[in-house]
Image (cartoon, rainbow, N blue to C red; front, side, top):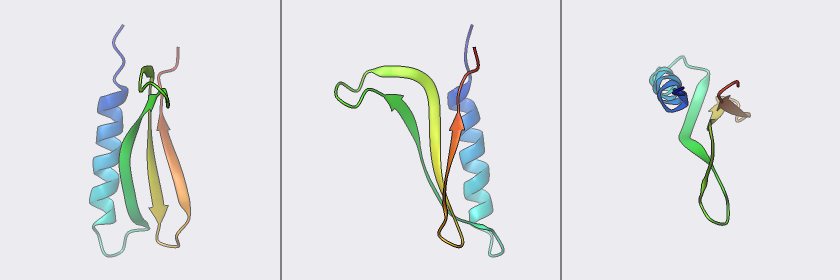
Length: 69
């Protein structure tokens, strides 16, 4: 069965970036979507995606999208 982690991560990331562009937003920065890859070979490990977010006070967050099996 297909997993839509890429699509869901893209929708979430775009929505947070749009919100961050507002003057009154609590979001300061939205990082790029990171894939779950092997650090030595770059091989695909899973469909999990992560997005780093920083709020207006400098606190960092990690948004994770992963398939539940």
